[in-house]
Length: 283
Image (cartoon, rainbow, N blue to C red; front, side, top):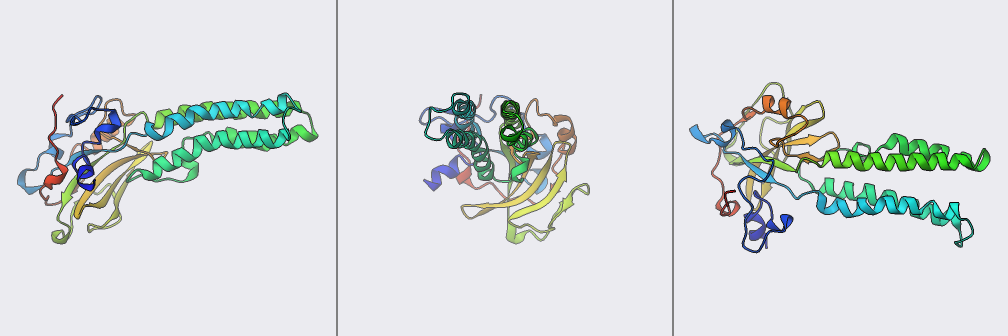
């Protein structure tokens, strides 16, 4: 099983796109742009970088987020039609919590499963301001006016609609990193572009250098798999999700194309292990 996973570590598992048995993802999928020549050219012994596709986020987000509005709308029924349940307040509260759990928890799990991802709970694509406003004013419907409860509920609806829209925007660009094999034992040091914040001047597992952008950040890190060592570069959206930095229509494509016209980190590359190179089918 591990050998099979290694074979698709770069191009992605065909099952992600419901490809038939024996099929291999193409060298370029729709929307992906080739790496600049400076990245793909391994001349003079420099690193030969490749795109590593990550599991599409839609797998774990679409179904839960589709059910979230249903439970949020359902949470209003016990209050709109009182006396139909053993405890209207409790049932409404449970349905409300389920709705937001279905929206928030899957995002946290999917983001945490991505290599090179990051961010806190509050950085998730959730409209926390409207949600908090609704929570703050909701208790007032008990002591002030029952109609305030429906004002609060309208804020919850608006927050969920905006949150789903924010989530859709943050995962619109497929997740991918750029990776290159390294010989960590022989790597005494490397050169990183001066505009980057360098966290380590030696290879290590974990963050090595970062660079902030308008809507996110770039991260260079060290990784290992199946006994081999790699360096990766990933674009991390402000929500913490990883996005392919060489993709058509990327919101920061102009800035990224300037920053990444050539690799920001220079080192003597190692050959790609054969276990990571499946037969690639051209489009």
